[in-house]
Image (cartoon, rainbow, N blue to C red; front, side):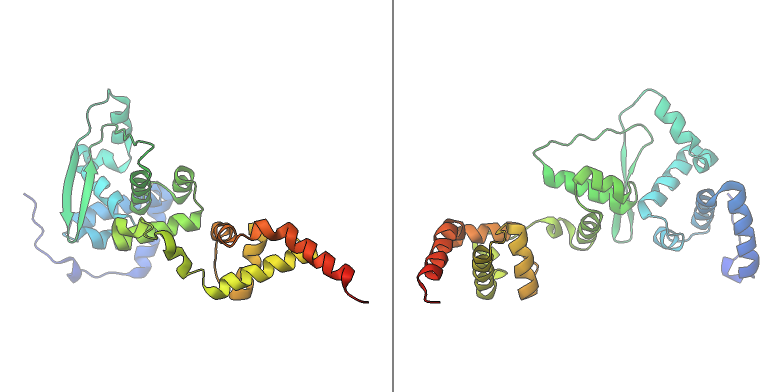
Length: 256
């Protein structure tokens, strides 16, 4: 058994020399390869996995995969050659290993090809899995957007919610009348006012147009959907013709 009787902190280091060596190595074998080698070396020297992940800006899940691959394939793990060869072999049932690191539990999949099947009627499960892969660095934000059909900003927001608030952060807990909490009396009054103004002036009364007008006037972030919902509740679409007729009749009958 190899046992180095020294503390790495006792060695002398030169940031200038380090930059030159790293730059030369990166040109020779690439940044990713350099990171993998440093990660394995730090792991051998006893560094904590989470600290290695943070120091190298490498997702923790990616680091665990690298370490697992190294234990299975040796130095072939550096070039990813081992993973490619295994994928070309006949598929076997994948094994999942659990490894605990501080407050985190990591799932480590064996190198055999793994196929995950999700039912269409399990949208929350699909969302959680895709966002988890995104948070772990297994897929990019662009790929997550493609799977979920959301904007990049929304994907990143949901990823943060999942990371900080667990699954609860992804569940919309609003029920029924609770939507009125954001749709205050002031907002309802502004909606009626803008609707009436648009009808009288011949402008569009689409939910998109009214949504923009209400949000600008009230400095809110009401959605198109909420505008349509409350227009229906207030019966505004049904009075469009009668309101316009009343205004026209008033103009005809009023003295000049």
